[in-house]
Length: 231
Image (tube, rainbow, N blue to C red; front, top):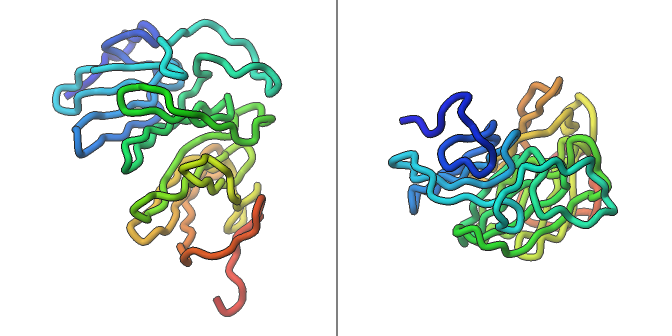
């Protein structure tokens, strides 16, 4: 099966084609595929994973997408009513809330699965260049209390309380040594709660961070997480 056609994309309101997709999540409960579309288009699209047919799509705040030039990002300007490019991640939580990364606008927006806007949060809002919101993974507890958010521009992983979107802590900084990052990009969590990160650009590696349980950690930036002697 193929959904979309090479070279045929007509923009963010095209009901059949895509503009450089960044990420796809398939919901096994409904067999719908949520598409972060993407590096050229500026929307979330939802497909029937059996047929490949596009069922619905939306832009920022659930608006009809608009591909007009938005000019350079300004941290002090009013939040745009449309996405910047890229729409870089899409992640569906167990409670059917959908999280979308508007990477170069430094924000995460939350929706119901029908495209109804719920809320948004900015992270490191003064971040320019490639932006601060790259990809999302959820903690493995049943409530998915925490979001792990990669920030490849500022070279860290942010730990966010999911229900309030409050940043609790962060770890990592720029570099090539273990626990440091160079373009930290994708993130995943396994069944034991261990975190895996990939690095783009010249990082070119995968790192694993072992889950040690719930405990007190420093608020704000923890820096490089490195085992202490005897641990």
